[in-house]
Image (cartoon, rainbow, N blue to C red; front, side, top):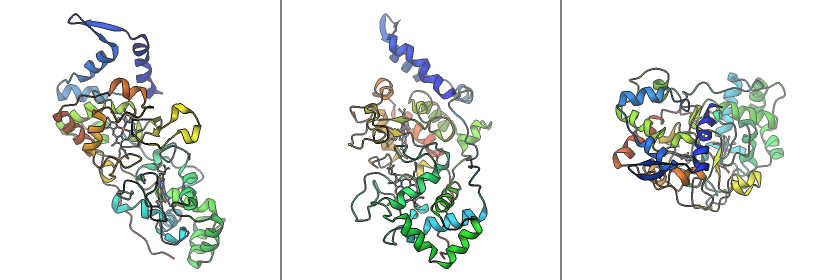
Length: 359
Ligand code: HEC
Ligand code: HEC
């Protein structure tokens, strides 16, 4: 619940539009909060304030569903399936085609390449730390990695394979019968394909970064510049309004102003206020996963910072918070450098799984 305290605290100020007198000039509550956030204390002062900031939480272990424990046989099978292009209709596309371990588990493209060679609708998101989300896809239309896994296999633009056919194909491979039998009691089923893929993806984690070490009590884990960047992230730049808590995602949906016809969360809820809203992505592993945003429209982290600094690109349904507080942010060049230095800390070193021998 803690993460909700902050926005709730702001609401009375905004609704009442209360104003204060400073230098005989009336300023709005929004301006006052922005001015307070802009005050930069000493690095030591920042450190103690950051350590008591409830929005910032070090990342713990990924939670494992009781009905899909991380057993060695399941993980091995999951890794094999992840790299096996026989899961696709034309036998040419595997999960790793778009979630390539060498490319930060993305594909380095703005949007994915469809089976027919055209550009797909959305960016292939990284699957680093995807085990920590409570909803999946940019619009949150799946609610577990198990539920998510069968989506891309059947999607006509992605792997274009019917599950019935896939089961027939896999059962015809002698090696798969053995692999499934040793991992699961009931052998080759849709459910078990999903479970194995989900379990394997829970291994792909970036944690224990210097940011986590800092929050876990090592005051020297971050350089002074990185501390200033984190202070901006949680203060003047307002990033932790949405990128907060474990995994730096509040698992909520916002429209940050990207100019696109992609309706985002609206496709799931049918609620017009959800047009263009997207689930807040995690920022762990972020240095490995360019280009950014659901349409891949921002090529670098510098571009992302400039984007937020200018208050987004003015989509008509831009989230209230961005319009009120981040329009524009007014970061100096030095502050942008500091913020970038902090984001780079979150990159970490994701484990790079290579293609195993296929049955
Ligand atoms: C052709 C490219 C492509 C292939 C192949 C593909 N994906 Fe994806 N994947 C995407 C795209 C694009 C999205 C985002 C779709 C959306 O949000 O509408 C996505 C989303 C995901 C997500 C959600 C991540 C998040 O942050 O919510 C996971 C997990 C995932 N894919 C795993 C897989 C697995 C497992 C496979 C293989 C069975 C696979 N993908 C195959 C392109 C692909
Ligand atoms: C109002 C909530 C909100 C705020 C505030 C916010 N973000 Fe985001 N962030 C999002 C959402 C939602 C997305 C995905 C948007 C999309 O793809 O359309 C996103 C995307 C990103 C991405 C790209 C992630 C990826 O995998 O493509 C980065 C990097 C990022 N934000 C960093 C920041 C930084 C730095 C700040 C502060 C300057 C910030 N965000 C402030 C909600 C927010």
